[in-house]
Image 1 (tube, rainbow, N blue to C red):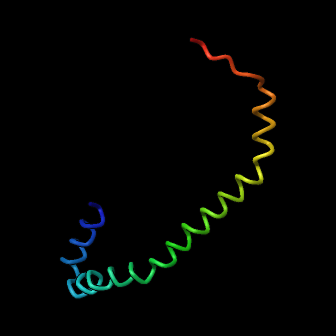
Image 2: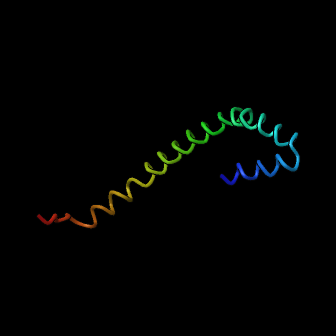
Image 3: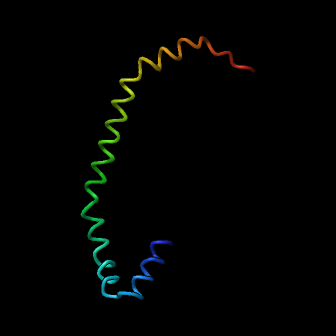
Length: 72
């Protein structure tokens, strides 16, 4: 909503710039989409690597707690 209000202010102050931004925004979004997908893939790979590295510590932490007794 704030972005829309800022765009309306820009439309009042400088309408050619506002219309140019309105046209270029979807093109810029499409241009940056592969980088977003790459960021998601790299983030997932790093999360997987972190989980593999910290797995022994997590296992030792759970074993040191002892058996959990569940109340019925």
